[in-house]
Amino acid sequence: MRVLIAGGGEVALLIARRLSREGNEVTVVEENADRCLHLEGQVDARIVHGSALSVSTLLRAGIREAEMFIAVTNVDSVNLLACMVAQAESRGAIKVARVRTHEFEHWRRVCAHCDLKIDLMIHPESEMVARILPVLRVPGVADVFEFAGGRVKLFSINVEPDSWVAGKTMEELDRAGPPKNSLIAMIFRGSQVVIPRGGDRLLADDQVYVVTTAQDLEEDFRFMGIHAQPSIERVFILGGKQLGIAIAQELEGQGLRIKLFERDAARCEKISQLLHETVVIHADGTDESTLVDENIEGIDAFLALTNHDEDNIIASLLARRLGARKVVALINRLNYLPMAHRLGIHTAVSPRLAAVDGILQFVRQGRVLSVTTFRQEEAEAIELIAPAGSRYVGKPLRELKMPAGALVGAIVRPSGEVLIPRGDAVIAQGDRVIFFTLESSVRKLESAFLSEAPSFWSSS
Image (cartoon, rainbow, N blue to C red; front, side, top):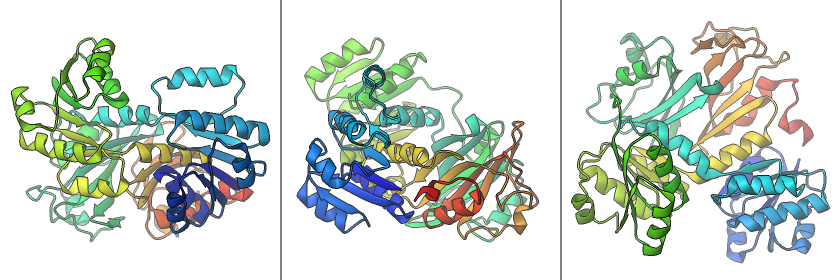
């Protein structure tokens, strides 16, 4: 498949790197010359220097021959106008655009009204809201992801040195009597990713991902030594941009007491008109005396959601030291994510990864239902539908020759039955199957699982 990407930022780089590795012909258009040089050393793709607003540049990049056009520049208007050019010059191309404005739904309607067909519009801030809200009442849990319409849950914890699971092997944990429908799917240890087997051991500071059912989630929390708060009452939010406002609006609807800190006085005035119950404070939320004066000790959650990663990390560490039960930091630079976890920040979320996940899922549409990327592309969770011709259908899992670094985490039958499988489980046609796999094994896994069924690479 010939793919043209407008924009050469981190999201574009991640997408281009993945698609080029999967055998696609990728071209990236980037306006900054220095960034072009950087991209040439990072990805096996053609790099075109020029503006995505320039029709001549897009023609030079091959817009007429492109089968898919992905617009992920840092400017919404550029992304939308570039899709307009793509529609005029290559009517058969599938079009994807990232749009970050709070007027996202309005622009979706405008595009439809103007007959501008954008096949997928990604709004990362909405994805961030969906990722942050489920973890607020569980201090020890970093992430909670859902699969199969919420019937399968994946949560992660950071193993503290005094945790009872520290030092235990998978076999020892299994003998300790965990909930039946649970499985440790992945372990992140520094820069290493482990798809665990029986003899692998959990160590202090590991980030561990556990897959379970919706019914067993709370029991799995307790087994891993995590205690959820029955309810939360007070939340501090640092940063009055779109994401901070959206979170505050959601929490207002739940009746929580919220304080939002913003340095810009004019911005505070605007926020106060949008939020009705939130106390908006014109102050530096990274200042210790300010947080103490506002009674940070014992708050249920502190959310650092500014546009500056360093401020978010520093503020989160300060808030935890001052007594916040749960801290969440927005992180844009993907290489900061492992560091944030090692520093003890409970939850670190990335709008860039959210955008990448949505786009990769769409690119692989068909039998691939969802894609979740972890940290700097090191691993993925992939949800697929089992086709009739798959070599993985009808055999016990222990007999399957799966790629190294891949694991079946859950099977969901068409009836709704959920299995967290062991070696004797059998995948049947039409099952939803959730795999956890190292990035290096993704293509082999999907090709082998989908077998003769139509796949993304069949058009390459």
